[in-house]
Image 1 (tube, rainbow over the protein chains, first blue to last red):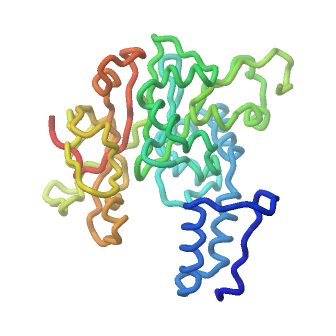
Image 2 (tube, one colour; image 1 turned 120 degrees about the horizontal axis):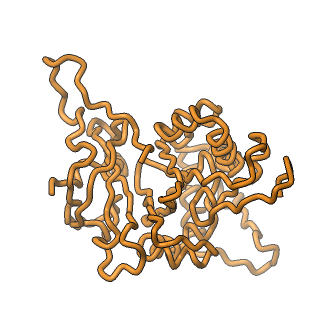
Length: 215
Length: 116
């Protein structure tokens, strides 16, 4: 790319936007890679397209299927990656997936203390707070106080298992099925499952007993 | 826990010999210690667990590249197992404020583990 082709994106919508250090670094690196012919400009765009095509609705489908089908749940807990592939959800970043089941005695929480490892294949991009140091440090050091700030109070007789994703494996929490959902279809169940419940920072509340109506 | 992936740790024939790094060195239930090494550079073992004791919960299959080596462009060979290791929060953090039942679970590459 020649000098005259550099475009300065006005991402803030104001004329005086100044990019930060890492943004300049990232832009320079990308431009150099394209200039040297290591990658094509379209590959960056394509990768963003791949990332954006994943979102928490995929994780919610997995959870709803596991709640509705005991055999699928068994396979999901035994090998998350293979079970995802059954539903056509591939692990595009070539990582394994361990699904962590919340039970009456265990509450799971997911973090990546080193960076921002996240089950992107089934949840899409992580929320900003997941990538920030306060969350990453406190999740492993004082998870109960952290959860309290999310409004989640876990009694002391329930163990908290914090999974720190560091390398090859991504983690997804299988939340407990809310009470009052016995008659729900898989689709209705999926609509109850939130991103944060699959990270483990919240639990799902029980559903008022209006048959077949999701809140 | 039911979320333990099946172990692939039995050789097909008793006479068959494992290749180097093929069989898992540790098994579920083994007491381990995370190596207390502090090499310069970026490593995938957070400092807060180095030198700490834990227990192997499961062997993560299949074997994988040591992604620390991979980070330096050395991709050939070197496949070994990752292990899901459980450490007690009270062991990790003196004066831990939560419940004594609380655990940290983390995956660690074989070369970072020692028998404890």
